[in-house]
Image 1: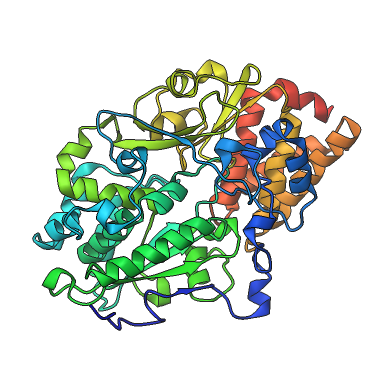
Image 2: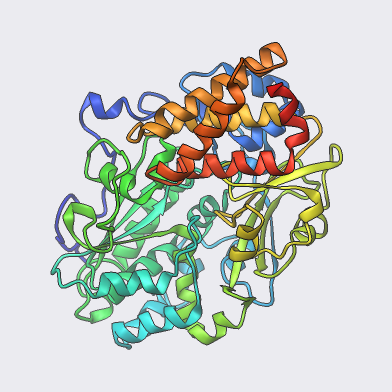
Length: 502
């Protein structure tokens, strides 16, 4: 079937999000191949003693590159290859079913009919019924915020604009998380089918996948999947002989953590400097090119075909409390059994750490960072906490993207705080003052502590005010997450940090 001409850009093509040198300078990988890099992410930092030479390469590398999606084999370089352990520990495998059985990279492996069966079912229903199904399911965003997915879909569907967009946020930059990478590499048609279903439900005819450059294999697999889907009439004009037309373009990022934030991501696709924008208006009202835009992350979208096939009630029956369904957790290399595990919400942190991960292979565990470095640390005495959005929030932590970064006694708290704030300072878009200046200042305070054994005079008061400013006045989750991390350290590991300020 010929490709439909559906609007801006060459739909189905791949492009980089910049043309001008002043914009290209914002990114970290504009002139470098990923294979030439070493990872400086948090999972690699806490495991640095497992491969000192690799970590030395990463620590000397400029500009820094945070997270290559290889946390299960950290510390890692771009040249390293490997596949994590993949297991389902839920009553239903929603996300990892095909991946756990070796993957489905081609349309034939994905569907015996050579079509998208769930999309075909969705096209036989009204958009309203599909949105209602997502609302009933209780699905919440898997990218970090945990916002109700059905509410976001409805907000876009209610906009009267004749042109709307759907974006898959595949800029999985939280160090410690790598589920999106393997969905893209081993189950790409699930994402494409979900994008088409979302487009049908909200009234969009154009979709984008914003893919991070740190995942070169995912780029190759995705390009093939888009071409194959179009050739079989699953993308393009009049899909499955219906009145619905929808096509997808891939936009390849060039290395920037902040592009995982939806307003920065949208600016990047538009070819602008990818700085965070104040909200409202939200992208659901005024997003890409000023049009209503639905932005969901990869794991959220990969859940959609299962919900449409089995019903919202079936998904809502999984999980517990206000955290419904399943979530894939990514365990880092310090675990005895690192890898991807699909679990139902309600399982305890202790079960994930010890029953699934097997505890640590290096030393006794000191804590685990869930959802990336920009969230609170969970100390061992709180491991009985159920894995759920509200339950983790109550102890100053977060579900986030689902990455579990455990660390042992070989990583000191001052070292960890310095690493996290160095990451935040490096990845800040610079739009808001607290994040641009505050994160850098905290990094320098911790650097002085590490060099001299104590902080400069007045540093404790400055630390407190800077963390407070980050929490209250930051434009996006980067600054807020840094504050949550700092508060968690003070609350649970103050006995190790406080003496540094005396």
